Length: 239
Image (tube, rainbow, N blue to C red; front, side, top):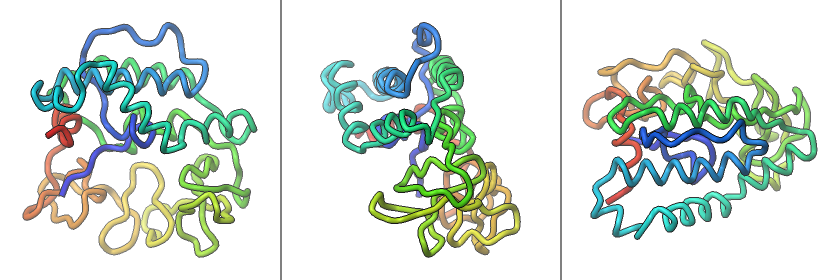
């Protein structure tokens, strides 16, 4: 079983990391999240057109503009961009423009056959670009939560808050050796089969789900696979 990387936000940034098209980065750091989202949609489509079989791509998108419109529409419908823009305006989150520009540079510099990285270690991973400011015990809602560093948005039962309709609070993430049945593990750790946080498993180790592997790729039958290339990640859903 394989999973796509999660990169910036649901439809645009779940897709990938760069394709080496050689275009310049943004002209200076993006001033707001929506600027970055637009650029990310463009890069995602450049990756698709550069790395994937042309016949398969053309069957989905007649040109780059059509691809960008489709990717942007999917991301907009997910509501993440609007949530982040509102949170920044309300002061419950901040957008790191310098980190976003570094992410764009990274994505543009990588080639189709370069290795990808785990989503949580990716410079384009959402928490690296948007920093929540809500402290421990503070109110939070929905999938994003926008809690501060080392925290996550927890429901009354201690699990990750899944809906904007729930009344949730920011709680501490689990550390190495701590239970992770409900709470997510801190950065660079994964929830292992025993239900505790630990180091991601190397290639060849037995796995049941991709998230325990250092590569985020679990082959069945078998074990953790080596990390996918950018081409494999980008083209996985291009049939």
